[in-house]
Length: 222
Ligand SMILES: NC(=O)c1ccc[n+]([C@@H]2O[C@H](COP(=O)([O-])OP(=O)(O)OC[C@H]3O[C@@H](n4cnc5c(N)ncnc54)[C@H](OP(=O)(O)O)[C@@H]3O)[C@@H](O)[C@H]2O)c1
Image (cartoon, rainbow, N blue to C red; front, side, top):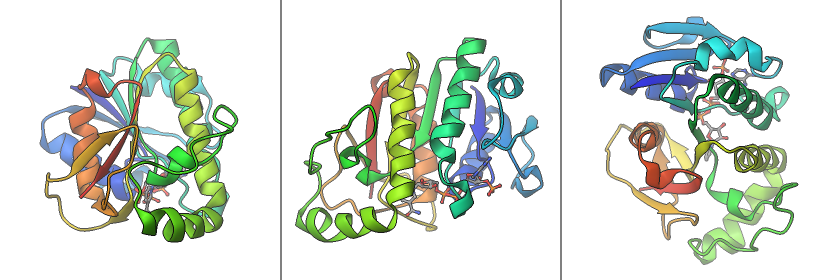
């Protein structure tokens, strides 16, 4: 497949790039710091997504079969970049007729309010007692701005007419690829509290050409 990978220098992004190149895909990597790319793909485009406009990204996404984004804030200064960057990416996709995008969100986002979903369900049906009443409230306090950004990123996708998938992992680890994990559409996974970045990347590549994942949020967890 012809793939465009955004944030190909991040924890998930670099594994996505490595796995995609190893699988023989024709990859364009987009990064604000391309010197950090772990392998050299067919094409490299430099873009800071906090300030980029869609026009600047059209050459990066044009002709792609799928766009994969592992974009997320590296520091507090980056907060808001997931929604802002995804908006520009989707505008560039629309301008170039590219329809498929897979992004990384997070497990708690189904219960985080956003302008388009001001009253989400109070609890995710996949979450057990510990996540619902202990872990989630603490995380939502500490990561309020980050989660708001991810919820708004999902709004951007819902408002688009694209074939999007928002992958919602729980806590990420740097453990090796296993290729063994569970998935669930529109809800979290009972007892699924962890997954490796390598397995998230593996799932994103797998989902890229799966029509059943279009316009879905998908939980992935061990
Ligand atoms: N940590 C967890 O346990 C957890 C759990 C669930 C979901 N998540 C979500 O998963 C996402 C990805 O995780 P990760 O570990 O791969 O994150 P990461 O290592 O922090 O990677 C973030 C990527 O986004 C890029 N980026 C940030 N701001 C940018 C900008 N303005 N322009 C262009 N690129 C920009 C970074 O580029 P640079 O390399 O140039 O900085 C990096 O490639 C997180 O951001 C979070 O939303 C995390």
